[in-house]
Length: 577
Image 1: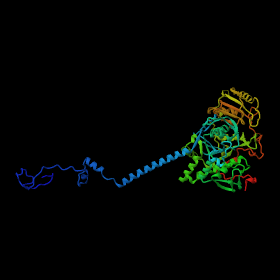
Image 2 (image 1 turned 180 degrees about the horizontal axis):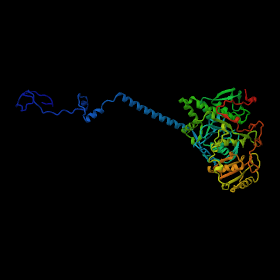
Image 3 (image 1 turned 135 degrees about the vertical axis):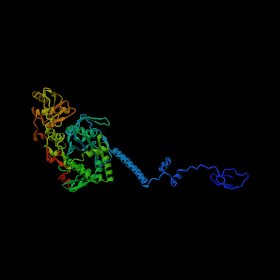
Image 4 (image 1 turned 90 degrees about the vertical axis):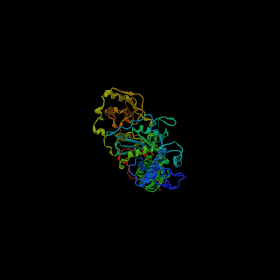
């Protein structure tokens, strides 16, 4: 028979545990003892389930500890943490790709296409640096812009131009606009894409955009103002429409019912909310505002942009994700910026930088101008005295609502004082050029003017003064210095000649210290500031497009950011209803 280990077999006559052999042929009468088998190995599961298992069972005990079921709360926590981590990563990826999408919407271009680029603004004593941004509205002729009134003649123009100056300490902002029909010197510019070189010319400032792009507008402004520009931002027609829609409309105000046959603007008297194409019509309206000059349109544009900034700051779009995305899409699709602002991150950083400026310290002004002597019924020119006074305030970082303040360095009487740091006159080389004469009016230069001033300088001890025979017609005199180290010498020279501080400018293209005797200094060896009558000579107040009145830096010209004045309407019957 087959005996399984552990099976008891009964044998007769033999005791359990007996030892002799079984009787031959014997019968089963009792229990036959079999060899004692080793206990079968206990499985881990049996050992774990076995009651009374001793503690400290070595590796078996460690394995048993590992096999214990985890508490439910731990499994829930692990699952939740993993899910949240996935969601965070997914959200981060979505944000990243969305930001990259917005970055792809933004067009960018070179900042300055001219040859004579100014050095950046110098920091103040606390290391803070002023910020200058040129804001442009493009009269583009491409795509949907043509349907919105861009037309197809004359090339692309920058009909809206404002320089935004944020003070070094970000306590105030100055906005300077120019009429689009201001005639200025446009420097030579090179198109970065085609390589086409546009020669230096004299034309309306809005045409400078067609000389290679917004970088030529920047070069023109630097040439005109002596103010270094750090960035530009440009919107086209379609951008104005989409931005107005995204922000929910912009409030504007007119004193009477207004209609314009050209722009098709039609609004009742009082405050109106304009959006879409009405916003565009507001910005393009010219003859229906005020006396019908371009200055009226410029002031209307200032009102619109100032109120749009308020709407953006206070808009619920900034807290509503859907509306915020619509606004982000509209803004990035509408913008062309310089390469230094070519990402959402850069634009956000710029916004954060300007957030601290108080709303009641945002001051707007139109550049002082005179009717253009060559075409007084159509175009204007910068007022040589008053516009330079305004530009000097910006270069010296003085707010328009604090014009009487002197630059901090002059208050402190430290190293900026010419008497304290200027070199002896004999050690200061000076180049003098004849800038008298006016190309626009045909007024001839004064012969020998540079030589006369050179002799006067030598008589005062500036024995290194020399005459440059090449004429350089300039409406107003300028004293240029090449490096910051030359500034004290330039200011001392200006004092010696009776020149105002505002004519002293830094210019990297200057040959050391260069004095340009402008058309405002046609006689005498001591500079005499022109009287208002002299500065307006050759102008016209005939009720032309130019407006017929000289503009100046005065309180009436300043429009504060929170101003609520309504636009005057042209009283001619075709502009009201």
